[in-house]
Image (cartoon, rainbow, N blue to C red; front, side):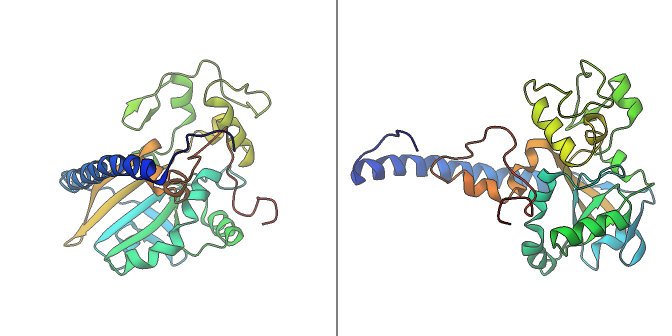
Length: 265
């Protein structure tokens, strides 16, 4: 495990109490940020989005399933993918556990992806999940909520994600595989993950992760919040645990897998 600072119980307690003060401040700050999220203005959704679900064709309002609040996870599983994004899959592993609690607190949870419904349901069966999953195939929903990028946007360097314009790729991504896309900064892991979904870098990165919140009031749907990228950290159930483990996240590249791909699973 390597050398680490050691000390007496008294030294540990003194350091722990100092850390506790910082943790309490972070908790108070987090509570304030939650209040700010809830104070954001609601934006009325006037576009008639359609989704394919296990119950048939559905409007956005139908995804609420009788609740007044809806949380959508924008799951990276595009039409060309052979399997869902392993990172999104790690996040989704926790959905079944808390979806029932949300449903009994007036909040519906639903994943939405661009792949056709049959592909979504087949992957859900593989993973052993049961949470609702809707296909936005053929809809503007993913593009309007900035979780799908077109080939034209990629070519022209007009990719907007996480509330900013991304810099153009330094070279064409088309056809790049994990071996052809040399690791540079964070791009190596992206190629590795792309390969695990059966796609190249360009195809994989046309889908983006995110979550969006909606409210249903007097029959009208409102968009209330969206977050992307590191804003999703809190949804990775494993990370709050790792942040409290002795060695923390201790990451070197992409270490996680789909839960049925670990040795001995």
